[in-house]
Length: 276
Length: 102
Image (tube, rainbow over all chains, first blue to last red; front, top):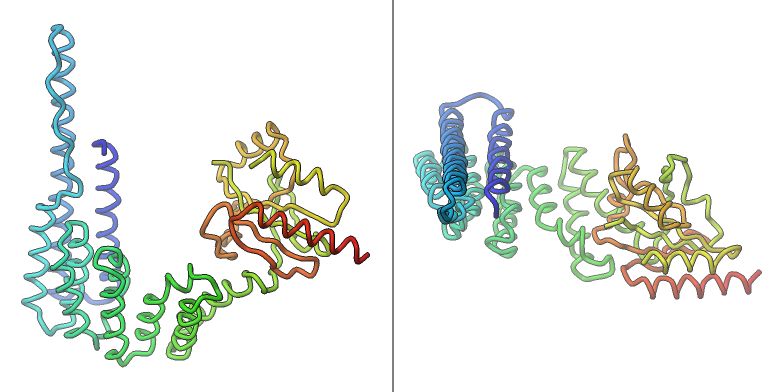
């Protein structure tokens, strides 16, 4: 990976965490735990920015040395080793700070945001055991909490890292323990998302996921979550073999409007293509 | 793929058949150039024209490209997949059936 692309990844990554912190912000009042969370986040951002700046400096130094060597007609200094990104040990240090805060707040809902960060940052640093431990704590101590919603999304992001089974187990535990129908529905929908989206409509995985989505639709009180559950089913089912094609109203490549149904009565091959 | 599609369209001219594309390219100007240069003779929707809320591919839950969908005269979906030969053979058979029914 070139330094430039490393930095790009770094910037995206910092934005990701900032987004997570932002979501917490909107949730309500600034407790001392929230302030501590913001401070820890700021610490991560500063450390990363310093790391990236050091990388830039190192590159600039090498470029200068290489230019100088070329001017003197001597061989250039050897290229520096590529910088590690993400910098695992640096992240691990910060993960430990979030773990410490979660432990000190144990039993308090405020600990959830710290655990969520242990999961997302722990994944980046390859800290499997730490991520598993945080999942376990979420699914036991905090499964009943009304604040667990944001952590659900974090969980799905590391499904590949710790395995779908582990994530499913955590989500099921939360679904069973949490009294809030909307949270239960969200936990279900997140758990079945990939089967609902990717499995063939006639497969057993899809059929099972479909039944779960219907259950989520009944559990949810929030109309947005309700319709999300129904919609994910409807869209797949009307558009697979044996279903009726929905009409498409769109514009062609010259900007002229037309409809798929303009061709009704003919055999249509609909070709999703791109020039790659 | 292009010559294949082009000759299919030629072969099926004046028969109850239509090849309709859904094109995912973001840069409209460059795709128009390609259509002209390679003489692409079928009509395509823009997958997500400017200002559209959803792309056609997201509504149709298309995750893999290319995806081919064969639709019969009553707008029933009879094939969905990425096997071009299978899709075209099925479409040709249906066209024949439709012609002999007339």
